[in-house]
Image (cartoon, rainbow, N blue to C red):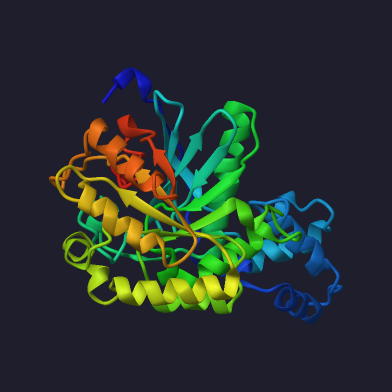
Length: 360
């Protein structure tokens, strides 16, 4: 690790487990409890705006409410906002953040800056249950799903980092951090609603990408729910035998099953799918592997992100060499596949793809 490139900050947090979490309540439920206490129902709209548009972290910030109402809210409810436990700055300007949750658990998120965009990579679970062999998060125990508000908070705080450090607005969000988003479907969808709604952060759903290891029935549910955001499939091998070696989810969601789910998804949404493919040395980087990937891209309109692999302590995989990667990419491009080669960002602070493991 390049010591000079890494800067860490730590903060102390307070944990509140005793009061009702107001951000788990709908605007209608808030209005009902307000009127039962003798307050006007329209105050619910004001409170909701403070929570989801202005991202208030305390009731004291809600200055258009009376002092008595703010005191009553504080006595009966809490805002379990996540806090920054630490942050690290990479030599390439990537910022990794450890977020502490109200119950003491931690997850990580990443701000990925480029010349023309600021991308927030957010987590959806504490740990992960899928145990993909190449991913550091897969070696952690899954503790619990994140609440919708906890995912929303990551976006808000990474957005603030983009504005503070680089004077640029947050432009994109990827659900590619810790956990499998489609195994936290309800909270994932609710968080996106708060992020995209005009009663929330009002970001375009087309700026959001949800990445899955391949939960076929939930991919179909995305189609049925008319999801407007982008879908990415962590493929990494277009061969069932190889994919099962590195991703145990493939045993129950193999390539024919995923193909059928993706075809259903595209028939409903008309959205292009992104295939994510980490290129491992001497495992999935041959021309035969490229041919299998090309064949799989024929089933639905798709593009391919070839991802530079980031080695982790728990696994022996290494990144393919540049010549092989160029040949692999050229094979696909020559056959009309849209290919992007994604270079690692934040490797020196374990913030790159597959490295999130709460090592801070």
